[in-house]
Amino acid sequence: MTNASVEVTPKLSRSLKPRQLIMMALGSSIGTGLFIGSGKAIGVAGPAVLISFLVAGAILIFVMRMLGEMAAAHPNSGAFSYYAEKAMGRVAGATVGWLWWIQIVVVVAAEATGAAAILNSIWSALPQWLLTLVFMVVFTVINLLGVGKFGQLEFWFAILKVAVIVIFLVVGALLIFGIIPSDGGAGLGNLVNHGGFLPTGWGGVAAGLLIVIFAFGGTELVTIAAAETENAEHNVGRAIRSVVWRILVFYIGSVFVMVTVLPWNSEATANPFASVLAQAHIPYAEEITTLVIAIAVLSALNANLYGSSRMIFSLSERSMAPKFLSQVTAKHVPVAAVVASVLFGFVAVILNFIDPEHILSVLLQLVGSTALMMWLATVISQIILRRRAEAAGERLAVPMWGFPYLSWLALLLIIGVFVLGFLDSDVRIQLLSTFALTAFIVLACWIGLRSKKLELGESTSTTQH
Image 1 (cartoon, rainbow, N blue to C red):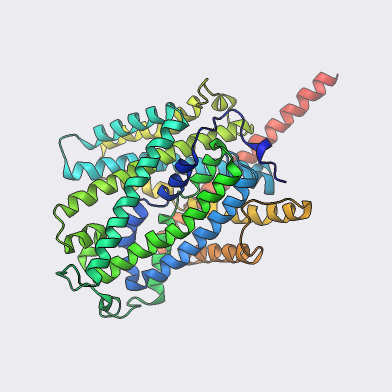
Image 2: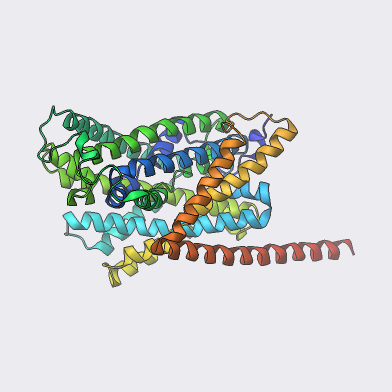
């Protein structure tokens, strides 16, 4: 039997409903990576970007299944940080937690800035810095109201994004089959008529893979929310299973529509969602798509703010962060953790006022490739913990398929992505920055935890005397 009933963090509410968890799992995988990143990937790989999405999707599905296995057995708001601690020790757990928290804190600021910039491009009545401030205040308040309010808002965000993608897929199918006339000659011919299916070679597929991998970050949030969900063992499994096939349908389906309706080397692929809808002569296609992208970014901001607050809360609970960050209100809200997670976002408001044109690109560069490091830590943790579970005869509610073969395959694929990244000059800089930050955090965590251990030892020794 699992220890699920024992290991759920006791101070957090379990008021997140199963339907909210399922929609959060789906919504967290539908963000700017699909709406914006897909166009960039098409530009470097051509129609063969479908291969990039299939490979990246396979890695994501493996990682999510492994997270689901661990989250159903050991639900904890620290998620992959907690699993790294169980598998590899406290320094590893603290490093993974702090690295992810720092990344997400920066991402929250970048998403508030990005949504403000997007809306400012079509509605300039309010300056970018003021819109950023409004978004930060609104979503901070929502997260302070409790997990129930957060879950309800994220549920409707996800519903809206799913509805837009379903409409997009239907319109795309009508264009491909000629039921709706297309100005640009939509059809399967676009897969081979502009330099072939592999117009930029396998190097283009590799470059597209790197873009897609980084676009998939954020899907791990569902395992953090597991600690605040009723019957986590059952509902996390449902949420993970729902993500698997919907990622294939929504991502692969949407990209297939893009590369068949639009020539891959046309300027239209810079904003593929708007361009496909424009081919169907849908009025205000660009404005509609802009609003949808802004909503997707705000949804990600809301989810990442929640995730970052729960991660720093868990680190505090495990004595890896200041103790006051694990205090909760009578409504089970970790107020200090939420406030700590939004501070940099409010600093970004000032930066938007000073330099609105360059702040977003600077923030995105700071994020680097930490999502890939999280995936690597997750796979290693699952392999170790699964071995222990099998040795102990534990029953797993959401077991990883084909263990150990698919787990090792996922590990090899992630290592392969790292190797490909070092072959690209721009990605190499991000990877090196991430490695440097990781090394710094490892050292800081080792020193901090060792000092704490020594203090506890001295305190015990004094008490005994």
